[in-house]
Image (cartoon, rainbow, N blue to C red; front, side, top):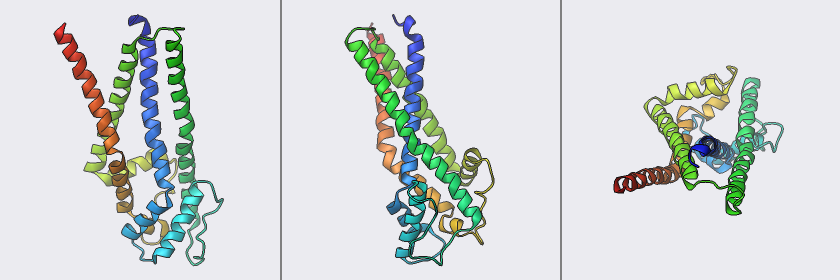
Length: 231
């Protein structure tokens, strides 16, 4: 039974890994469109000193655009503040990424439905799925995910500037993100420490979940080891 289910183990492991990665991307997209968080980041890290009401207007304008609620980046009541054509084009690229990230909720739902279908099939005994197959998939899938998270976190922690550059080169196929700190309003609003603060906030919010997954994986591994030793 176990050998026959090796392909299923591999498929389920991949699906678990994809679900975890999709979840991270979805949550990052949600965070990027949170008006309150963006306003708070502006207040703390912007190199341009404005009134809180102005930061609020800018945050609303950007997040509404990124969520697709507006077709243009407009700062209500702040006509004197505007973005250059290059900045707008870059935000258009960012909007595509955010749209993709938010759209991953459907793929997560599809994976969830697939696991539910497998549960039902197993429950009605249409096809017997070995419990070890499911356990293997979750441990391997989440295990690989945790390794990816650990390596990425270490890279970001050791050299955020390099990581920041590499991620932009990976995510964008143009150089529109290379804005000038001296003349571009967007990069003055969002300097490097603005983004590092976003990363820190995301890490704090999801660290408990990552630790729970890590403990669950270790608990499963040690439990299996104890069973083998007992045999």
